[in-house]
Image (cartoon, rainbow, N blue to C red):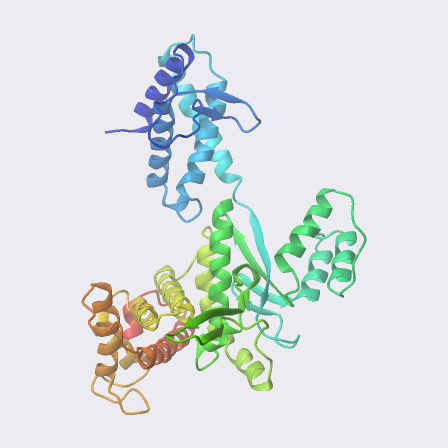
Amino acid sequence: MTNKASLISKILAELRKAQTETWKRPAAGRVKRISFPPALWLGDGRSIRVTEALLDAVYAYTRICWNNDPALKPRFKIEELNKITAQSFGLALAEIDLDTSDAQLHPAVSERVEELLAEQIAGHNRAIDLTLGCHLIEGDEPYPLQVGPVLFETREAWRLRMLAAGKLSPTTARRLYARWSSKSPRKRKRSFDSSAEESIVDAVSDCPVVCSVATEGLSGRYIQEKGLLAARLAMTAISLTWHQPSEGLRWMNLLYDRRRSHRHTVLFGSGSNVGSNSECAELPVGRYSEPELLENLRSYRWLFEQIGEALYGYVQPNRSTKRPKVMNALFLSLCWYHEACRESLDQIATTKFAASMDALTGGKGLPGILSLISARLGPKPDDPLMTDGRKTKKVMAQIYNDGRSKLIHGASADFAHDWTQVRASAEVIGRWLLTTSCDWLCENSGVDDLNRLREK
């Protein structure tokens, strides 16, 4: 069985081999590619010649660290962890004398690698705000809006806050104000500060709202990946204040996710006439503000608090979570709900809405969803659920069995039919279950047993 000790022995042996044997370029295959001698980089431009087998051993060492420490998995992608492990080995091996025996080198290298690796991992225990522009709700009245680690505020409020915190220089803050007031400031000399200004302009552009996601303890790629998802899910949480969240989300978008607002196709028939079709994929501004909406946003603070707790656990994995099980289920449910709202194909959207409901039951399937509906909404399986009189069991069988299970397992015979009504029903029921579950979790803040959600 491979362990760290045997891998270090192999690494030392391969290092000696790399110093005595000439590297041979791999034989050219059908597809030509550029090949370079394998190396361990030290992080300062220097490198050590090694072998492919040594790099494989370093990756195996990384995998052992990854598997032995569960706290690393939500913080690092495996390739990022391997990069800092390889650098740790490079620095440790650069310090040794190969004339010394392996018996003496082995413990020294092992201890030094663990020390360097711990230092580099600790270096990622930092708080970083992922910041970008977005369209959410028009006007200044709704802001600031906060869903856990995600904060939405007006562009000007963000500028003043960052200036007061010393994170923007007075020069950059002044120039941003000019840019966002439709003025053109003079060209700056190249500097770190001017680069920061350009980055902010690229990320925020002319969006009236700035979204900031407070991450902590994440690697570089996870800051980007998890931060963006947290921002999207926070928007979905806000959209739950609408009766039809997918309609609310049409107005809400991160600048990072923007596509062409209008998409066109040309239609040719059998004759000489040419037709066209256009679609507004997403609206170019945020949702218009109105008194009813502002009141809704204020009255749904409890919902944002529950979802915010789930988002904290995602982007701040070192943060202690009092209810990890129910928060994990809530996160997964919201994630599937978000995907369903953004989905263009009706039956796939129905499948995702069903997955959102299933997540709240801990994967108990249709029976679990029926019991959740009974506990949180009231109707029993044979009771009417929808306003048109459709019964709970029938509606959910169409959503979960026909809409989800048959499609996933390749047994759907009606995938070419119109699934618009089923999708609409699934969206409404999914919203009810998400909001009522959050209401229950708010009132039972000490409970971490998902089964309790299905109890009356």
